[in-house]
Image 1: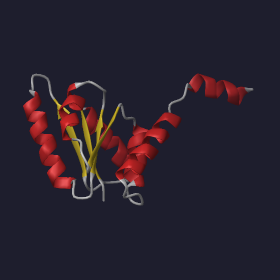
Image 2 (image 1 turned 60 degrees about the vertical axis):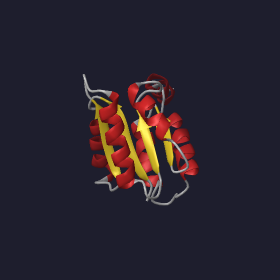
Image 3 (image 1 turned 60 degrees about the horizontal axis):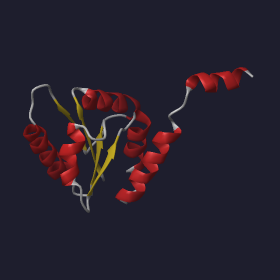
Length: 134
């Protein structure tokens, strides 16, 4: 099974993990890492490498909160044949990855599908509701 690592600022990773597991249940090969105020990049880098070794036997997708932020910059050098990264993730993307990895074992197909799914679920709710009223 492809592993998933959430790597974010503060407590975002643990919050997103909690929300996802509330919806789809407890998950294996799923880690949540956050960089805390005053913590150096080396601490996050070490935790990230450890998580990849722990859950990465079938590949890993790292989800970061913000392109160009510390979690993104620390993760980028670790990308390779068996590690992919998606930046700016949302809950629909995370759920798609968690459910999709049960059937899809190709990292590139899994990440492409999750990216498309995430974009489809970003909507202006006011517009959607206005269409319903018409």
